[in-house]
Length: 247
Image 1 (cartoon, rainbow, N blue to C red):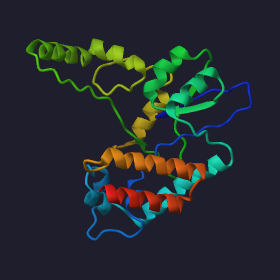
Image 2: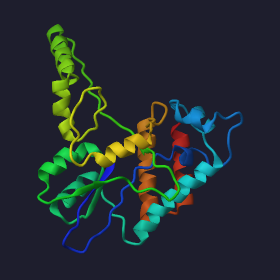
Image 3: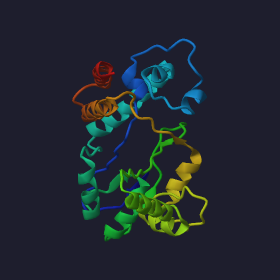
Image 4: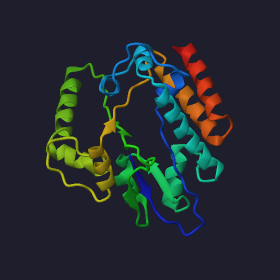
């Protein structure tokens, strides 16, 4: 993800929206598991169960997550955090009433088409002396065709999409090139490629059949903490209790 930025003629309201994974914060208030794997091991495996997540929790990591959450809450207290849903942010940015929009680089093509002004793209901010490791994501097409003709048509479509011709069309969205094809880089993708070269964090879905519900609980808790409705300590504890019940 990168930040799409512009200067607005009106008095600016700075915006910094953050997606915080926070599994370590939400699941354990303190302490570490015995015989825990190395931090490198945690980063290179799929932590898709409660036990796996718990093994990778470290007290210092919990405190670091809490400090990051508090930093965003402090921005809100200073009037520098625009609390809104994504579908409100982009129109505000396109209209010129919001000076900074944070989002996936995949939105670059659409924003370039819709914006009537020049804007620049910048890498995501980070804390001093900390490594920037952006979360990674992607797209998925699920096809449930049962008819033989539909199955064949689907497979032909997928083969076209992953061909060089198909990828050249797809790359116009702003998504980064993850293929071996030589596809020209779009203006504005420089920051995103820089972040990719710095390293990325693999996203892990919340474990269990109720993972989507846990994700919702965490997002709601983040909103409350960022808005200052609850303290970071109370918000994290509340999320931990609610998600433990779901697990």
